[in-house]
Amino acid sequence: MNFSSQVKPISYLKANAAEVLLQLAEKREPLVITQNGEAKAVIQDVASYEETQETLALLKILALGNREIEEGKVKPLAEVVKRLRAKKTPG
Image (cartoon, rainbow, N blue to C red; front, side):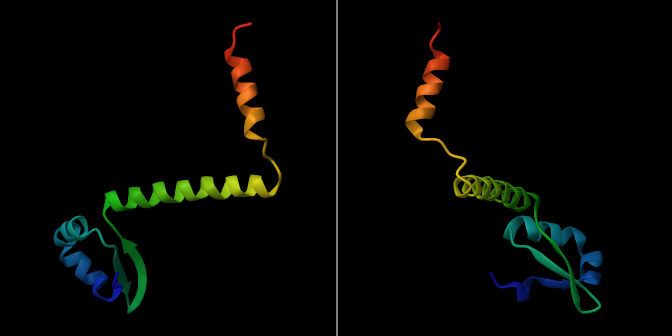
């Protein structure tokens, strides 16, 4: 992805907001907004934002799992299956 074509000053956003929103939805690429020549914000379409948030959530879950493995907070699969089957069996 080439961000140089997706950089616009805030004045462009103010003058062309509706067009910018259409382009965001069509291209599904983020747009960097500058103010006084400095990057100040990034905007993106809602679908892309939601996908990014879902991806981050999955990565956090994986990181937590890896940390638990490193800390030894794991049990052998056979033990877990045995315990689950015991709970399932009326008794």
